[in-house]
Length: 351
Picture 1: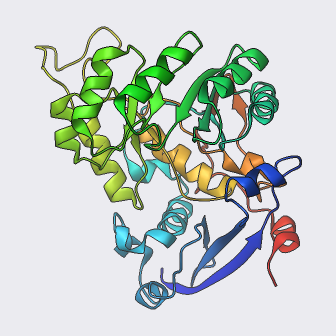
Picture 2 (picture 1 turned 180 degrees about the vertical axis):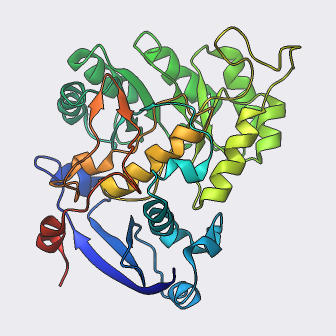
């Protein structure tokens, strides 16, 4: 089997009302994305959702066997489509190409931007209606984080909440003040409250508060982050399958001790660092691949925010994955397990 052609379709799916103005305020005026179709000489077509330019990659893969690119992150913008081809050829779901399946259902969370409290309240209600148990929102200096958390908690007290500061709380003293204002609510964790290079700041923060702290794996290097004890959880958001699985293995073995039984207790794992995965796509196609990946990452026990397409008018698939009780079943169909909606793609195609 050889790759013979790559087709790229640019699309623009609007934010659903009433999120257009809030998303523009957040700097998200652009809704454009790209669907890539990778064709083979056997008629199998792999698809992926990635906004990156692929002009330098296409000449490298034309005429080549898709199997040549297993675990090759240098073709990352098309990597998911290549795996989709191979899985279809073998008549298996993609997760079987990635590793041992750890779970039949993957925990997920609802994602929103740094919206004003009243918009967050509306989105929290939609999250509950959509089957979610956790909501993650961007925390920025434009709004009072405590007011945002309260709005979510009042509207949907059953939801756990993840404020994601992306380092914008800046100082340990400020982060401590914010956490003490919100810790009475159902806070799952806080994500990157300080700039991640500030290891000392994170250590001081963790001494003063009990709310779990999550950071993106990579800065500082994982060994420093683990050995210092600066965080409880990791976020893995890497452009490539190989790098993601490498980081996942580090998280799996991030244990301060070993037990005679192999680091396991009765039905649960001892040690390691729980993680969630984050992807780069804009549709339910990218979401489906991330669910396959999370199914084989042992420490991916935290709810992953794959569902940004829910803020848009359309998911661009005919059969989007369904959230029930905060979980999504891992697809068992060959390939990605979802079907590209060609009519919708044509409707939103940029011509």
